Length: 613
Image (cartoon, rainbow, N blue to C red; front, side, top):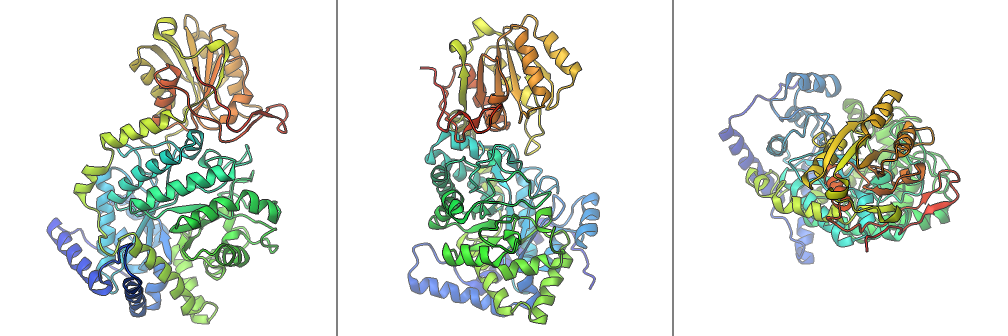
């Protein structure tokens, strides 16, 4: 059936629509029961939610299960290129039309979908989506989500506050800092109308070659990861944002990226209980709102070799029945190859629901997935009661986070909350406590402008996680200049060519020190050649690992080495303050660094880190 695209509304009409729709929602749901509500209050709230479900059509119920992307900076007036992308991929023109047609329960924001240009734009997009939802036959607010892990996965960029990522927080080792970071991030997301964050990562990273988790994990020690996961849940949910622990049953020991293939985790059941389960148990104990599945096979938990996202033994048997979790289960993105290798796109959402999932995230073709679920209910493969169970969990989450009471973002709250001086200063303080000093031959650091004023800055310049920061070499140079040094900056890249290496060696002449930003150095990486050639000049070299701390074992001859665990500006500026002695190096390795020659040998153990004392 053809749906006419909504036209742009005047501000006064939009405001009226929001007020009317919110009033309608309040009439359906009543007031939100506060956390301190009596059992009777909670029972009445539950009954109101069940009445909403009772008034929904089957199509509306199925829509609540889906969380999808949509292109554009505006819910009603996106750019033509985004209209074209929406028509091509979703069969609608705008976010408002998407909500009208499919009654989706959730929308996920991405920078590449042009959803996150600026704070006020994001808040207005969120408002437009909610207005469309609340104007529908059964007004239910949309749960807007994103991947704002911070560190190397970050969808909302500056001028919002950017914070250290998980492994950096693991190096800091402070649950208080982890909670404060999540509280800052949560408050800013909530102000933008984003009420579900796909964080924290609860994976325990024990494989240095892990291509998909790595520094997105807090570390390799389950108890330490559990403490920081718990802290972040409290921070996010205390700020009104649903936290999401991921990726169940654990993605920290794989050399395959589930975006592109189907990993197999060979842990025994006992090993899984010891290594992977503790952070998820901790998350459940902390009252986590949602848990995200992993597209990977764990034969010890399900010998059928179905990916966990589609595994009833894992999601219902282990997560729900053994661990006692009754919150929302959301799939990892259904357009990832790991979940598409065994079954077609029409079967995946049905199998996920049969396994115990509630939210179906970003299917490659929404119409295919939506119609497949409808058909499965109509054929009897899925019962409507099964759908109702998931919709109730989703509505409980929306009610618990206050969406029924206040669904629309407030522009004034954006100005009061997002990227404030207080938040930015908090991010700097937290970042300073994460930088880890791994090598300091002869007490070479800290550097002083009087002795080492001329510094050559070279190295990798990976793309900004949010598109709003960097490039790293420029940020490092600027931070050094602000502290009184005279830097020369030369970007040599992740795979420096022979010509760039020669240029760096030539630029080293007359310098007092060289700072090299390294990025995931492999055995055959030309970054190793770059460092070796610069060491051979006789100018003292300092390396700074701007992603994986394992780089320190791949280079030799440097006078000092630090780990920043990420290349967002806040982490790089903190590393420079440590380098220059403006801050003490306090970070300690949250993962062991193995020898480059023999991975079975630990070169730097968990907890290692030098000081200036």
